[in-house]
Image (cartoon, rainbow, N blue to C red; front, side, top):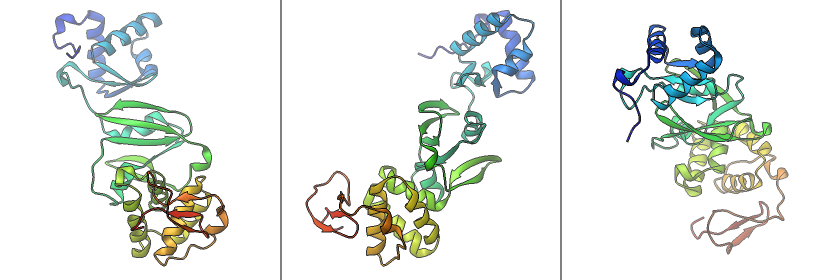
Length: 267
């Protein structure tokens, strides 16, 4: 059962004051710094207790430490949702992130599937956050993987996202949301052959991506489709064998150039 308070009888006078002020200020997101400025007349420990109680009552919803969504009582038990595209800049004001994986597979029309999880790859945080009606998976990655990033406008919010070619690289690394590696290979070759994705940029991204299996599998499949792979083969160790498909037998013909085991009869 929800612990959201819908009757003002359960709201203290101080809490009513907070609600009134935040509604007057038309806040949907409030920081601890703003909260302290609005209610400076109360000691710090009192302000902390107010935030704690309002969180329990569902009127404030934590995004991260010192950052909250404000849901007035009239928003009901479900609370107020805010645009999910405002969340990234609030979580990472320094810009050390990008939106990637499944939301971008949909954005670039690699798949028509709509996803309810937003992946934010970043250099600082590894956790899951529920905010704005969606789940945000914050995935910590090394700085060496922070490339191929552009900016997109989502309903007025500027969001750092992987560009088309980088999204293709990520698709080969994390193909499950799009239907697995076989589907990912088809998307990759279709994007390159159609010219929607730039081959030279894609190869450059592959060459510096730290996962050997992504480079090997991509090289083999590109070459099989008759697409030039440039200097990509120089970045791989052909003596270390990897399967073309995950979760399948390691039995199959070996492509010595790319160090790939063709472990699928239709591969």
